[in-house]
Length: 146
Image (cartoon, rainbow, N blue to C red):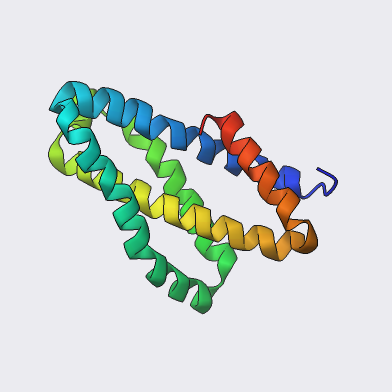
């Protein structure tokens, strides 16, 4: 924490960590398991890494075109959207198949964008201190619940 700029990353790191815990616990553990059946947890959870892998190359191209900060900003906006449906919709509405699929797709995009984009920004900003910054990120994800 010697570089005070690391403190500027704390809110987004905590939010991402919270989301890493929220999606498996609430969306998979409550919504999918209770409303659709536990047999669908793995299927829906698999959407996240598939979408993350599928969007990695297009996101890299977009990053080269418009830069890292705008792409990470868009990712943070999507991260905020991950928390919106559970706030405004009932469990029954969240459990509709199109909603479940789109939610997992959204989280796949967020996961890829945040993990890759945030890592690149940290490397650029902190340079030789990047290893320390990555450790702090991991710690904050854990504190956030992920």
